[in-house]
Amino acid sequence: MVNDNESRPRHPDSIAAQARFLEARAERAGYRLVRNQQPPYGWILLDAEDDERIYSGSLEQIDAWLRS
Image 1 (tube, rainbow, N blue to C red):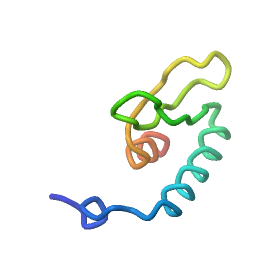
Image 2 (spheres, rainbow, N blue to C red):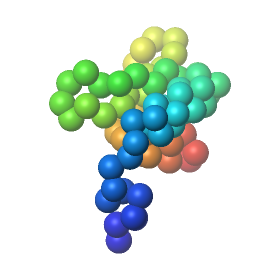
Image 3 (cartoon, rainbow, N blue to C red):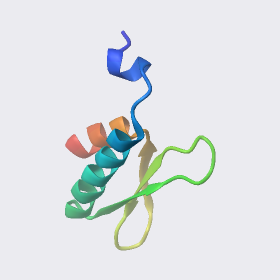
Image 4 (cartoon, rainbow, N blue to C red):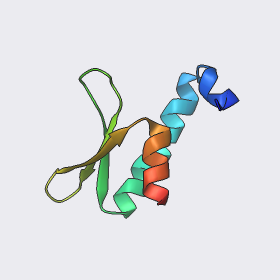
């Protein structure tokens, strides 16, 4: 089932706000959230100490992973 929010493009301001919120949450948990510069241009969660790649995906997927 597709969520209505997933089928509509999000406003850039809401994406930026969500990214800042998740960056702060990731930092508190010992991670860094960075934008992937290679296709498919998602997001990457890195270990804050050694930059090891922990998880990657959309902001929604990163949010769910941080909540788990």
